[in-house]
Length: 365
Image 1 (tube, rainbow, N blue to C red):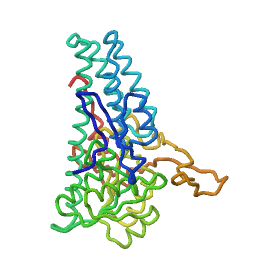
Image 2: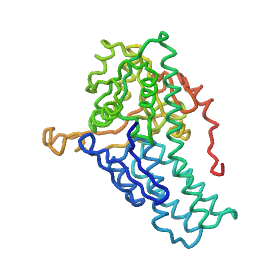
Image 3: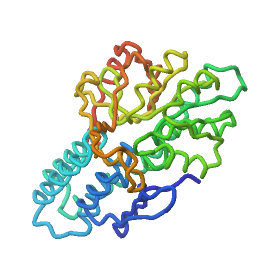
Image 4: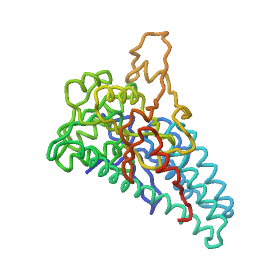
C-alpha cells in the first residue's frame, strides 16, 4: 500500500496533510482548517509536488465553505471562491497546476452562480463534489501515466529483460493524490517484475530525493539506491541506466519543461550518454499560454535552505546565495512526455503543439 499524503473526508469536511518537512524522521499529519492554512502548508512546503499543491489548495477552499456555511447568496459564495483561489495561486508561482485549478473552479463557481438549476445549497454541494472528484481523478491519471511510461520504456529493451531507472526529486504519493507520476512509472515497472533497480538523487538543497523519494521506495520495498546530485555522470557511465524519468511543474506549449532544480543538467548528461530522458506529468501540467520555457517564472527560495541543515549553519558566514527552486529543460533534450493520455515525442515541439493545443476544459461537463 502506497503512502497517503492527503487525508480528506467530505462528510465532515476534515482535511489533513502529511507534514513532509518532518520526513523521514517523523510521520505527522496537520489539519488544514481553511484557505489560510492551505496557503501556509503550500508555501512552507509541508505539502509539495505540483498535483498535490493543486489538490490541497482546492480542498482547502472546500473546507472553508463547509466551515463557514453562511453566505448571503450565490454571488457572495462565488466571490469568496474566486478570491480564495486567486490567493492560493500566490503561495508558489512556478507550478501551473494550482493556477489551472483556480481558473477551472472559478469558472465552475461562476456557472453555478448564474444557473437557475442550482440553489445556494445545491451550488455548495455541487462545487465541493467537483473538488472531491479531482482527488479521485488524480490517482486514476497517475496509474495511466505509470502504464504508458512502463510500456514506453520496455518497448525499447529486449523482451523479458529488466531495467535500471534514474529519477530526480519526489514525484510519488507524497507529490500527488496517490501512486505518483514519474514514481508511478517506476511503480508500474516494479509491479510487472521488470525493474532491476532505481537510483534517486538527493535533490539538494531541500533533499526531496533523500528525505521523500527514498522514504517511499523503502516503504514499498522497491530496490533502490540513493546517490548525491553530483554523481549522475559517473552513474550513467558505469551502471548502464536504461532511462531517466522525472516529473514536471509546468510544461510550455513547445514541450520545454520546468522541474526541480538539477533536472536540466541531468537531461544534458542523459543526452551525452545516450540515455532516454522522459518527463511524466498529467495534462494539467501543460501551460499553453506559455509558448516556451523562457517565459516560465522560476521561484527563488530562502538562502537558509542552502546555508543551514537541521537549523545548523554549514556555509561560511557572509557568503551570498542563489537558490532557484526549478530549472527549465528544453524540448530538444526530452525523449518523450508521458501523460495520462499517452506519450508525446516533442523532439522539435511541433508534434506536442499539434496534439495538445486544442485542449479545453469545460466547467459544465
